Each structure stands twice: as structure tokens, then as C-alpha cells.
Length: 348
Image (tube, rainbow, N blue to C red; front, side, top):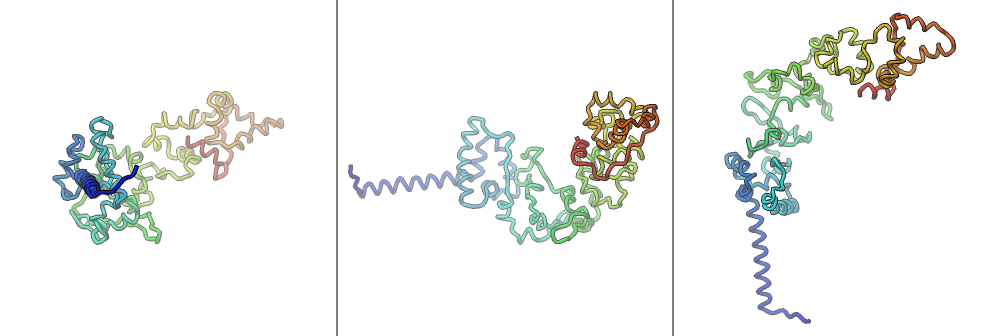
């Protein structure tokens, strides 16, 4: 069968092709408007907040798609599926969008971001944040959509975020220390003297669990700032704490531990026996070991501690028997660095 090009066929083909191109253009243009997004009930609050924001002249895809023709077309294909998902109810709840730094920087260029911004008594240099790889939405996730953003996903600029680096300890690759001097960022003196987190009524009890301890040194610059409250116990605990904490408890007492831990339960996560051991424990320890297993013993002890008595007993030396009469027992000295397996067990 032979096909022959005719003027009528060419005209019809051109009309169809033009219609397809125009249709695709219209579809791309319509799906790029807030009207298209607002047609879905789940997106209405986001569109309403957008209309009242400083970004009301920015189309949805300018923020919610990665720059580039390929990413734009991919986003459009996904957007055209949204009406189907809305009708079937097959979509993520709550609605959570994402915005990459590349999208923000379509408008917020280096000329803007690489100069200090001063507002409401706070001076911010975004250049360092960008170079460190921080995402814009880490502090600005509510931009354009305000309270429509779910509570748990809302982020705002906060001192806690700044102190991740500006804590007098963080050093960049060039060796420069990120200072926590107040005047670096605060241009006036009527600002709060502490991060917002400190105003929480439970902060005094919960700061070790919910705070970021590496940021404390920004304001608490004295070496004993933590230990003054924690009854002489070094905070945060040193890497060798697990193998040495028994001595610290002996010096400061359990009440120091109780400031942060429920000692009635917490200690038992590792110590399945009474701590410190009672005077008659040596005589009873075989039965205790059978009951709780020797794993709990090796949270603190090395095999050498066992051999200190059991080797002598094995060769017929009975001098260790005096320990069975309740004489206070001093554990033999252990190496400074415990074997890896023992240390791992102690952290269980």
C-alpha cells in the first residue's frame, strides 16, 4: 500500500501538530498557576496563604521544581497526575512540599545573600550558611505558606540553629573559630539573653535530653559551668565515662546521677545487680552470675578480675577465702582502655 503526500494531508497534519503543541503549552501554563493547585481542596489553605505573602508574584513551579528543562517537564508530568490522586484520595497527608536552595536562588542571588542582612536587631550573614551546605528551609520553611505548613514541619530562624557552629569551638577548614560573641549578630541590647528553648518550664530538667549540648559553650564559657550544677560530674560525659563512672558515683553519690536519670530503672539497663555491691557479694556472686548471666558482669569487669581469685584457688591457694567473710573487696586495677567488646557491652 502506497502513501502519497498531498496538500490536504500536509495541511491536516500541520493543524493536528499545532493543536498538540498549543494543547501542551496550555496544559503546562495552566498547571503552573496557583489556580490549578487551588482547584484541589487539600491545597486551598496553601494557596490562600501564598496570596497574602511576599511571594504572591512567584508561580508554584518556580519554588517547587529544580531549575532546568528536564526537571520542569518531570514536575509537569507529576502535576498532571494530581487531579487523579485528589479524586481517588491517594495522596500524602498532610501535604508536604520541598524547596531546594537552587530554586530559592533563582531570585535570591549572591548579590543579596552574600551581604549581611540586618533586621529587628539581628544581623545575619547567609554566605557562611550556604557554603556550609545548610538548606534554606531549615529556617524558612513557612515562607509563602505561613500557618498552612503543618506544625511539625514549621521552621524559623532561631539562636539554637546559629549555635550549632557559633559555640566558640567549631572551626572551619581554614582554622577560623566560629565565635559566639553577642555583638556578632545582635545589633542592639534589648534582645533576649538566652535562646527561646531556655524559657520552657521543663528546660532545667530536660535540657540534657532535648538540648544540643555542643552549643552550650557559646554562653557557658567557664570550664566548670556544667559541673557546678551537676555536683562535680563532668558534662557532657567523657568517652571513657562508662568504664569510670563508678568512681564518680562514689565521689558525688547517686543523687548526682538522679538529676538526669531515674536511677531505680536506668542503672538496671546495664547493671542487673545491686550497685555498688554489698560487702558479702563475693561469696554470693556465683549464684548471681547464674541468675543474670555473666554479660552484666563484664560491663565493668575484665576476665583478669575473675582470674585474680579463681587462678589462685585453682592452684590450691586458699587466701582468697577471707573475702567470703564479708571483708571489703577492692577490685584489681584495670587497664585505662577497656577491650572493645567490654566497652560495647557497657553501653547497652
